[in-house]
View 1: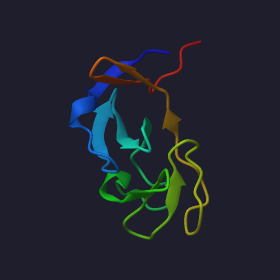
View 2: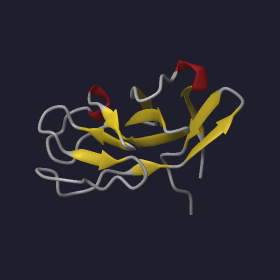
View 3: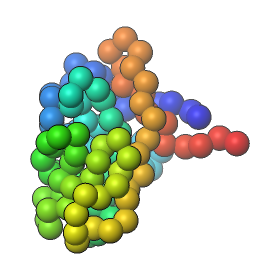
View 4: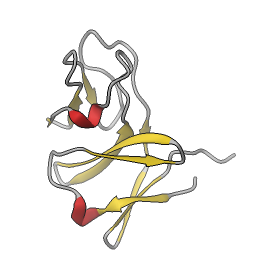
Length: 105
C-alpha cells in the first residue's frame, strides 16, 4: 500500500468531515470517537458528496436522502443506499494524516 498525505491532523474538527482528493479519488476524512477514518466521498446511492453530511455514532450520513454509512466498514445502515462505499487505511505520523487509496500487489 502507498500512503499519501491527506491533511494535517490539526485541520480536522471532531465529527466534521473534510473532503480531499487523493490520486483522483474523492475521500472524506473524519475524526470521531478518538480515531481518524477515510471513506470514499461519493454516496453509493445518489452520487453526492458524503462530506457535506453529518457524522454521528461512527457513521456519516448522506445529506440528500439520509442513508448512513459506517466509517469503519463503508456499509450502509439503511435505505435508500444498499451498496457499501470503499473505506481506506489511515496512518497518523506526527501531524500528518496519511491515507492509502491504492492496493499494490
